[in-house]
Length: 98
Length: 465
Image (cartoon, rainbow over all chains, first blue to last red; front, side, top):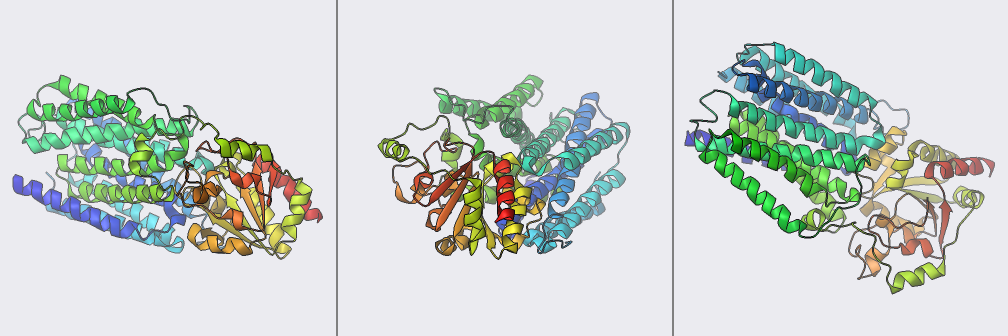
């Protein structure tokens, strides 16, 4: 059990470093889409929400799971769509379609 | 229950998120990157639904339909000027989802979490609820401030820091208690309630213009909350992804603080912008000097005969929703042979990169937007600097006046341009509550009025020149 926890911590720490490396290369002009996009990605807790809502073991868990699915889906769908809406507007020359 | 195959699919999703974020390093590849990221999310969701032994579908279908529809409508309807609020709201929902997942696991009869589970699992439940709930309520307060449902001023009261520290200590004690007595549901409920309250209490003392920092920080929290939930359900995908987002928020927070020359502690606990500063001797002397106001006609002439004009947009541009008018004016000037550039301060607007999005919406090509370090040496050979609704980020006191609260903050050196035209509604000071020497400079002309109206007049006059 302790070994498993250590593995999880290792993954967490290494992923933080990957995050730092990748994000520092994002130029300031894209910081707003970066925030909304990374926000959409943090909606990954949808995985846990789906599992909790679909296990059907206890009423309370099921209802909390339902709320979690709603919140996470708003986060995911809203986040990716609004990021796309913004990125669609960034053009190098007037009239360019990226 | 979760098979090795599902785990591999989650890994694939995490890899796609990383590749997607990497593509955000250039505006040319960014849109594709976002598509790759969303593909990762689809894979993660489908893998969960198909392979993790879902038993009842009713709640899932209901939740997915309501959530997706709401998200899609929000994303379509939101105005670009309201993007900071939108991100704050989505952030809050992400935090809430993480806290709710941890709660659902804890309260379920499963042996792996809650009663009978190893202490470290229940510890992560406590942390997930704490961080998730703080993210949720804190983001809602930030949303309220940005949407102007709540006062944008910092709300401060006596012993605030002490009481907030006590609240934090109580919440952490609640986490420990939960580990010791996982069967006690009252502890769980109290922990959740305290965490929600804590989120409100830590954000209300922060002023509206410091929201870029708060949103970045809450962004980081929503990632950390997701990662904590990953610990609860031992899911590598959640941990990797949560850590990525956590890192992203931390970096943006650092960038914002540096751009204001303030420490994170000062932003969070300084109560900056609680009251307007009392004018010192220097400021009274300034006010006595008076400002020079200019007619749209004269301003248009100055602009039309310039070789180079630099537009400096600020929050006032967003409030007036004047991005399209700026672009129209710039187009006209360019037709008359004026070189037009845009100078972007890192904390202009209410979130990092906000001005860039607004100008992109108005069809301004992104290579015309110049960052602070690059544009500053160019002001000395700029004929006209056109400041639209920006204040503190162009205040020369940041360079020269050691007693100013702005002292040391990197600014746009607008005062080095040959002429400065400032579009502003009134002489009201900016967020920092200090007078701006720039407005009293001999080279500065003030054009008072709503930014959108003033720009429309300028467009008319430039056409007539």
